[in-house]
Image: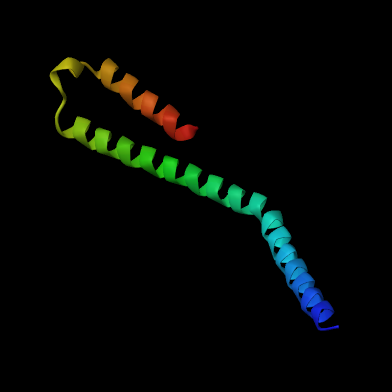
Length: 85
């Protein structure tokens, strides 16, 4: 009789643990979606910082290989396309 109580208690604990694992697994897609959204926001932020850095660098000093406005516009449009993605 003592052993039956011991095993029934173990089974109940196992069922409770299984329930917790199933609940956690059902929440995983939502957590993955949140992580993906955060990653997209971080990528956008990093691209925006890089865009601002280059824009400020180009405004203050034009490198010798970009002496005309057309080359500067090509670089700027390329960065703007990255930001829109």
